Image 1 (tube, rainbow, N blue to C red):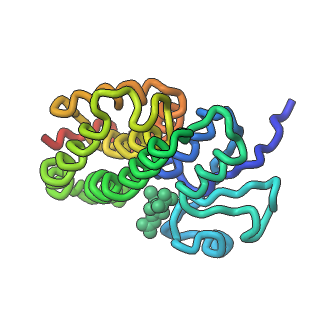
Image 2 (image 1 turned 30 degrees about the vertical axis):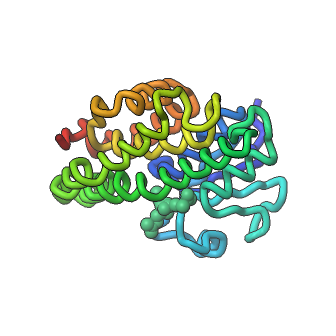
Length: 234
Ligand SMILES: N[C@@H](CCC(=O)N[C@@H](CS)C(=O)NCC(=O)O)C(=O)O
């Protein structure tokens, strides 16, 4: 028996935290999806047409259109908001207005500040170098871990304030996004969070969820082929 083709296609790579964020939202909602590989650094012409910012992920909803720009959405935040509208249960955005705004802010904070420090500051200098057969950029990564991330972890610790979730009293897009971006660091480096006990507890709880663990396992399998053991940046 063959599985039905899912409506939702995520173009990109599981190595991207933004692809894993969309995949995580789908898993948490039990919505079928597939990931179609696109190398964003050398994309095919059809992908350039649907990715105005030359970024992954882009979503295609085949139930809307099978090809062309129609039925596609660039940007993980727009994609997740679309999937929430299309598949409202379980809700992954809080109902209460202030909690809703908090969730959107934490999502944005993780997508920008945290991703800059963890992705561009740590993951890329290590993994991209190793993939090209070069020495890992440990100096840059150690600088990001020591000088950029603590301020961001302080903010997350303060926002979390000992709670189980960043916004409202249930899992939301905020929790999924923070975990996916933090795990971008874990792909290449140990991620000790002892100085931020609330964030450490949140991170451990998130890592136990299939929505976070399953897409990460796919990425980890790819990364471990080139880097068997994560680095200690402390
Ligand atoms: N805000 C975008 C960010 C997407 C993004 O930066 N993706 C990275 C991969 S992790 C990318 O496509 N980078 C291409 C490049 O740097 O040229 C989103 O949330 O989708």
